[in-house]
Image 1 (cartoon, one colour):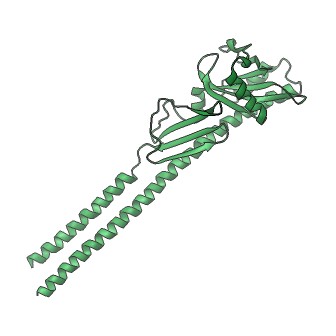
Image 2 (cartoon, rainbow, N blue to C red):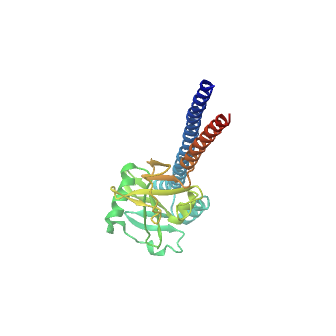
Image 3 (cartoon, rainbow, N blue to C red):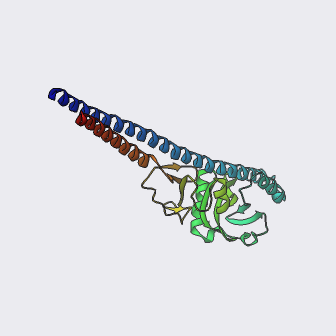
Length: 275
């Protein structure tokens, strides 16, 4: 009889140990799977934001390249306003189109609200010269910003070089206000959505990065996050999951497994005692 009881106790403890091992393995597997899904979620969002940035830049590049080509082939003449109006009507997030000759802004559309930029000489501001020369040296659209605009507010200026006889004539430029740029990405002014925290940082003056959401103080060094560098515009894109649940649920399942294991052990030992 004692041998049977002893054997039954051994079996009870063996079942207890096996249940702990099995439940903890299942809890860990669930945690790994959920953590992987959360990681994939933020990585897809980083890619999505990068694609949205590229789309905005590509639309801007299309506009400025059309203006540049017309100037280079002497086709623009006095039709700047008409052409600019047509181009803007097809791009809702671009606020204005400019023509810059010899570093001086000569035309802008729409003129209303942008009157003070006419005659503005970029040469008087070293930072503008440097950013302008970056577009000239790369022979493609280059964005400067976010910066305080001469006409008020904060935004981005994209400049595309115009060449005549292999000499820099000036630039075709687009203005995108910060609020419209954020809208083009499908985000809001806070950089916080129902699912994610966002931060976008753009290189300025070749050495420092300026954040788009300055008031968003989220720590992107911890949690479920993803980061990517977008070469189109020198952007660093950071996305962090707002409410990850893998850690919390993993611990919950682990504790439940332990609790169930102890309950089973207690029940088995209690039944043995009654016998």
